[in-house]
Image (tube, rainbow over all chains, first blue to last red):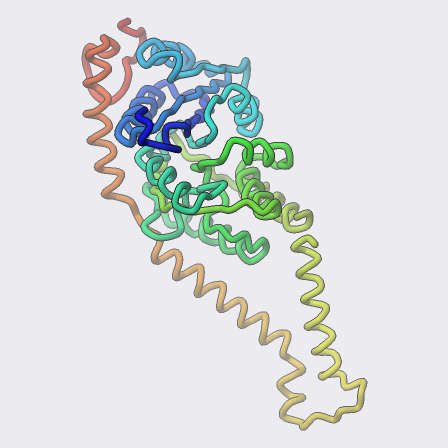
Length: 246
Length: 106
């Protein structure tokens, strides 16, 4: 990087990709990520955290490492399915960037938004930039009316109870300063959707600044969505726990 | 202060104000029309909040963006974009869109 790039030359973005049975999606998302960073000129690495996928995701990741180089694709697999929170902790331990990007590996999130995240972070010097489906030209694709109602209803209840200062709390397409994510991971105890909510709520508590970027969420190009009654119940339980403890 | 405590404090404040005016322990003797409005006031508030909630959720539902163009563009560009670089590296020898099925060609 030329000296004229200034601070930009020193910023490195570590993308954490927790995967489970993403054999088909992984090459595509890695290619899109690489292209996205090449177009915007950012320094990056992609950390693939595979939880012992039975479909051969790890083998695909090893091929990708050979193609793109082991400085760009880092494989940090785990023996079995251990959950998202621990995947982030595990990935962060190996991240050499000063910014961490978390996103879904199933192509619900498009890497084309990453340059916008980076730009937004620099604009406001934010500690966190969160992708939002609910503001601006953010939105979703592939959701039926029932899912939209549940989503908007749940978001409304969350906004009323928690007043979090961010429009999309259950989203998982975010950019964090590395030290901010490390601090938040120490404090967060929830799982699933509520874990993502707790990160934002705790961030507010600790005085971190949060910027938002509208994103499109394209539901599961190749897979199946999972939003059943159990998920809703556990969401409500988690929300009430956050309400009572934060 | 947790959100729960904030809510309880707010409700306690409103509740005390309402009880003071409606139950009239201080002997203020407010005019009858005022008393008639005051008594069901908590119910009015609940109903108003219910209407506000429905209206807000309805509005947000109606303006929930459908990223159809994004999805179409993504599918066609990504499927074109994937095959070429993977063909160059010998990962894909036929077919479009996905990596190979049973048995990798490398």
